[in-house]
Amino acid sequence: MTTLFEKTPGWLDWYASPSVPAFTLPPGAVDAHCHVFGPGSEFPFAPERKYTPCDAGKDQLFALRDRLGVSRNVIVQATCHGTDNSAMVDAVRSAGGRARGVATVRPDVSEAELGRLHEAGVRGVRFNFLKRLVSAAPQDELTEIAQKVAPLGWHIVIYFEAPDLPDLEHFFASLPTPLVVDHMGRPDVSQPVDGPEFTRFLRFVERHDVWVKVSCPERLSLTGPPALDGERDAYRDVVPFSRRVIAEFPDAVLWGTDWPHPNLTDHMPDDGLLVDVIPHIAVTAEQQHRLLAANPMRLYWPDEAV
Ligand code: 0GY
Image 1: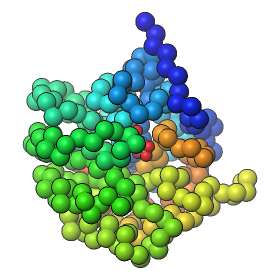
Image 2 (image 1 turned 90 degrees about the horizontal axis):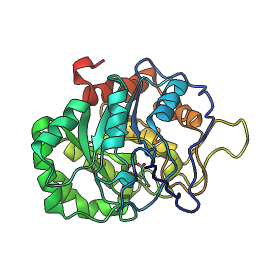
Image 3 (image 1 turned 45 degrees about the vertical axis):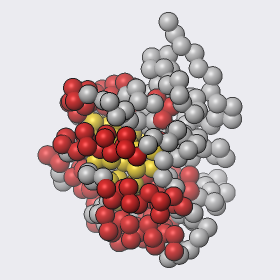
């Protein structure tokens, strides 16, 4: 039976014809944060989801990968699929070793299931603290999950907003795995880059030795994409934040497109433009190599680290 889903009203679909970036990605570049949505007819969206997206399947993701000049993907379970990881796992398995996955699991997940996910290429789980995306899971349940995945050498991806860090930091510090923060901990970029909120985040990164994705300028920006057609200097207000993280922690940063960009409401980014932000935030060839290739390879493909 084909399942038909109606998109959340106002849903913005991914950008159909992204430009070819002006910036050439270095060899072996990894898009370390992207998702697949369905397709819903094959991989139905979860009943508990907070949004219903458009379809954005593995073939479309791989086409984007090739168009941008990306070599590998890390596919992060999207909340619209709940704890059913089958669309993500199918995409990872189909990538012929060129993808890894980050799953969402329940505390009662079995060792056998974790073993299957590992064999498919999953290397982490995601804990999401955004109330608009998930119903809050009790911390003891998350701790149970963390204890189950730690022996596999997995990490935990944490997604939270900057004002919530003070309440969450103690819990994060208790987790027994490496941590990877989505979207720089979602700073408010109208605040100064050396203001108290972002400085607190950077000291958290330093204290706990966490990885940071310098992703999602399109989600964080207040100035938005370029106003002029043909202008490629996008999301300027986010640049100082990303640049500071990369300068302070060049060996702990990752980059990703966030394709197909769930829940954007004012515009859908041209993924080619997102690539063109990179030389503004990683300003030397050495920083670019670490951000795009050396760091993600060390975390997700340690046997092939470059
Ligand atoms: C992101 C951000 C968002 C959504 C999800 O899994 C998701 O639904 O990650 C968001 O709405 O901020 O990382 O893609």
